[in-house]
Image (cartoon, rainbow, N blue to C red; front, side, top):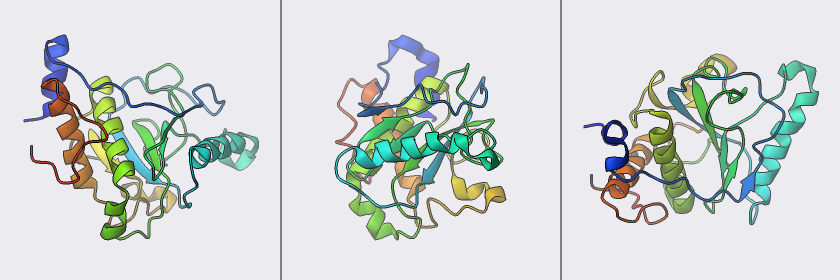
Length: 212
């Protein structure tokens, strides 16, 4: 059963996942290149950068992306919808709904995908990723919210579901790396949806290996 799809069909008969807190909000940045009427993919990236304390790393990524608008080679600048750091701090970039929700973040996917940048390195092995518990919990929470908000299934798919930047190789990217636990994070997101539907707590208490 697709939990997110079931909850969307039943509307307000079942409690929905509320969006996580956003410590940094840059929704009005200027790198919007158009609109996606019906986003169908949640695309996970890694910034290829290190951690900093507090929200400064999240703010720095969003400000850097905004600055690329001045570079002619970027064709209007790069953007992203969410940024999440090791501490689970989330920054909000471009909005999710049209009009004005399309940004350049993945060649071949900009017209269908909303993007989430994880402040991390693609070289991380599985053990390293699993030490970043708050980051994975925040990601799963945001994915659960996006799934219900946009009607995107919580399943692996490059067209209607959850995918990684490395699965769109036109730009030569490898993030978030071959050891990123995408299937685990999808299960965590489904757990959030299931818990919300039952009126129970979710978010930063999500187990790393949830039983559905």
